[in-house]
Structure formats: structure tokens, C-alpha cells
Image (cartoon, rainbow, N blue to C red):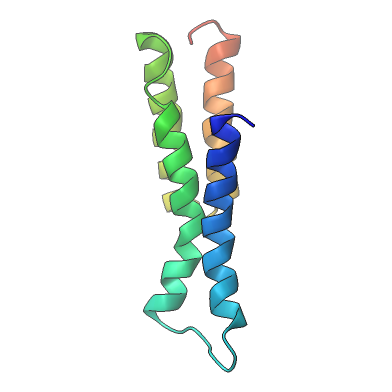
Length: 102
């Protein structure tokens, strides 16, 4: 397996392992800070994956990647929907590539 595959498997293991650990503790319910922390783990892992790929390519391509990431952040902040943000960022980047700008 490639290093990328191992990285993805490790991140999935951490993400779901921490959640499973909390769910399997008998008679324990997470509230407040603990619950908010676990709810943000998948988003943090995703952000780490995306941030690693932002500076790739040439200067113009890198600028469009950063613009798409910025649009994603704005859409998620306004709509509170990760799916809407991902679709907006992906659409921004794909349109730039289709037009030959990236």
C-alpha cells in the first residue's frame, strides 16, 4: 500500500476510533465541550487533507486552489453546511480548469 493509503487509513482510524471509544464507555454520555470536540474531529481531519494539497502545481493553479478553498470557507460559514461548501469550492475549481485558467 502507498503512503497516501496508510495516511488515509490512519486518519480514519483516529477519527472513528475516538468516537467509538466515547460511545462504548458504559453509562457515559458526552456533553458540552467533549461532544463539541468529537463533532469537529472529522472536519479537522478533512481540513488537514485539503490544506496539504493547496500549494501544489504552478502559481496560477495554486491561486485557484486557494480561491476555491476560500469560497468553501465562506459558504460553510454562511450556510453551516459542509456539503454546500465542498460543492461550491469544487465547482469554482472545476470551472477555472474548464476555462483553462487553472
